[in-house]
Length: 393
Image 1 (cartoon, rainbow, N blue to C red):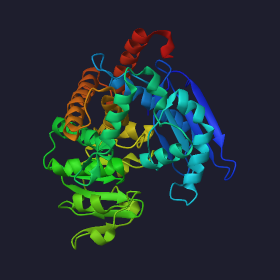
Image 2 (cartoon, rainbow, N blue to C red):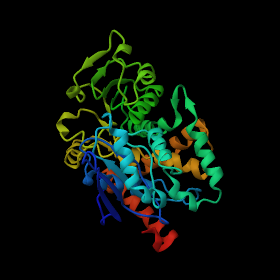
Image 3 (cartoon, rainbow, N blue to C red):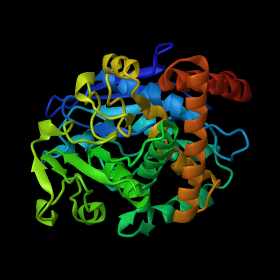
Image 4 (cartoon, one colour):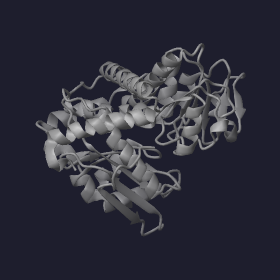
């Protein structure tokens, strides 16, 4: 987790008048009056969770800040709704939440999909409410709003081998972070296990398999599918449902099905938790050499300390899963065009540079990659503050 240096700029707690379930919005920091961060929906979501995620978004913005780039660095924020996204009433709860936080979306909070929610669902509800976009707060900062909006809209229309580009960019970054970690550890014949098969987990599995790293196990909400020689990731990816559930009818005869609680028992040197927060709280259950955090805050702080003491390399979430956020803004501000090859090239180059920088600093200072990332983010935040003045905070 990112250590909270100071209290967040704003915390909002909302209670749904129909179900009584709470929802939250935390703005950790504003840069030029604007912040960025996704909206998640899951049963059990808490204010503390959303606060930590918002701080992580501030770090992601800072870690990917390029003073030579076109995109304006933003502050960090996060939204969360304590409700099961599979419940038939989920869209209605989402609609009431968005109505309640509408003033923040219109003026301060640029927001996208996160765990349990899809961007197209958010967009449809916002359109029903008569709102322009989930990122309309940033429009006043643009030189040419129409071109920026068209560029992003064009990017969201791109599909790569049957999967939308916006569902692939985050996993491309996670996979590249994993490949750097594999190289740094000099792992021979690495095999990967991916926990979660939604946008982030599914894309990560695709790019790892394409890079020659067999994905020997995948966990979804129903259980685990595994094969020591590697699963047919592409077949499973193209037949999963909207919630990232694997169609078991697509498994091959030699694929195994295991109970969900066995997800850490599958032998793999690379572990990619890509589902819920706090999924790993027992370090003794982890047998991988490399953990790449595709989900937000999937490893508890206690487990992380124990894993680090054992020599397990953890590439933290604020580094590994930051490509989705960066891709939005690179495309929106024109650092890249609406093109899949341009997106993947930019993501791979930026992620490789960032991961190596973090790991080099961690080695030099004899600290953890998370601590190194926090130090780099703090330094970048200071630069952003000096560039944009007191309105930054």
